[in-house]
Length: 436
Image (cartoon, rainbow, N blue to C red):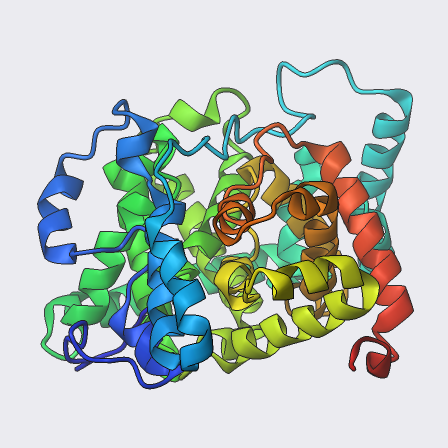
């Protein structure tokens, strides 16, 4: 949640008088008492209990409460105080496996799946790939075998012209490593050390339950990507939450070289050039994504504030029962939906589901910035029965911060996206329909 830009002072002890100060004076869901945590992170044990590793929702709830308690009128503060006494219980890991249903070891490909794969290969082999046709086929999911090149094309990183692709890849990869040579040494400079320090703290907390992401070689890749991005985007600098957005790209581009047991694969065993290519491609594709949602991470994070408000207005029209239920128990949308917007639902879904979701986001016009709103609305409504069964503030917040998606796969994501598309079709071009 905190912006880390050069020369920020430590403001943890100050009263937050605005959304931005709240964001600056608090940390990510895992981020409390960084100074004490750093020693712990140096000896992070991936086999220790889940409860000890990632008490995410409980810390996060208390962080969000801090903001509301400071900014809310006196009439609602007593309700916010209730949130601080939420009971602690272990978190279910959100990532059972990285691999999707088409990964090695899955059942043989069906006739329909083979036909889809052939169609993708035909499009990709064309001298000039029809990007509109590629988007149309990608909307319902991209076969694992062609996902890396398809993501590079849909993100705008690679050109549609097949002959130019190799040249563009070579040039962009070299450009990224020139940035490393030019900027990365400055991470210890007074001007940038706070930014680098926050990145260094956050990286071990990115997907802490997957051994792949605890490897030093992988953590160093993430540190370089995030630091270079922050240096090149001074309007926002590094903001917690951006670290999550590297993960899907890294996993997808790694999947070109690893087909089995990716969770435990030793990345350092790959040829150095392959490692460098995965890193550079992850940087550029993440940068393309962030270009479309950068107002989520600039001063005071206006993009997120606006999206949370839009979600509230949309839900008030499409499911008045849920909306009124939240009002009755004084649940604020920001208390759960901030993370949905800041992390693009990555903390709510298994990684395999995020990758499938991003197939559609990259195929959909303004997928990450606009369509995501409708996905969040559909996601909320998915839990309608459970939400309405909760008749107290604590129960609602516990549910909303720990939704049981661990067993979700492509089928559940497909249904979620279909409902989101229906909502977008009904409301996107008529915003007055969801505004009171």
